[in-house]
Image (tube, rainbow, N blue to C red; front, top):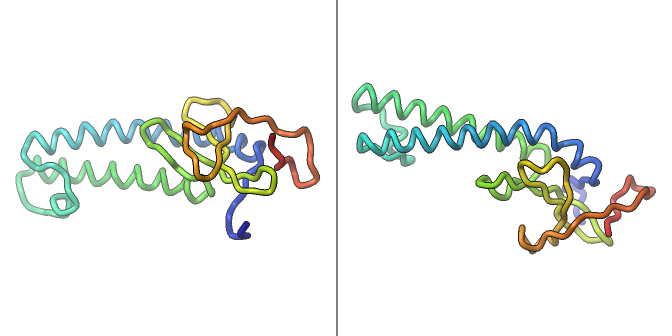
Length: 150
């Protein structure tokens, strides 16, 4: 296991949940607003693409809508970047799924949290996804801060 990875105990991951709830509340709102902004651009014949969003011309409405879309996209990118900077891996935006790197029996695993859950209650192997989640049971106490999981 590499030293440059950030490992979380269950307690450390759970300490992040309140902040994640707030951030993913914003993410969900921003995504809804982005869908609305996308539809508005599409209705005027300007579906957002990397090229069309950089365009400066067009009607006042097109410029306003492109600016709004860019602002929303930037805000979404910042929210997700803030989560990733904490060492948390965002796995699925549609359901607000995040993984925290953990350790079980000397190997890397993911501690799994989904938006709306009040705590981290599941884990899965590194190479399996959401469908491979197992209920989490942490040992009472270990010398390294409770990283052993069963």
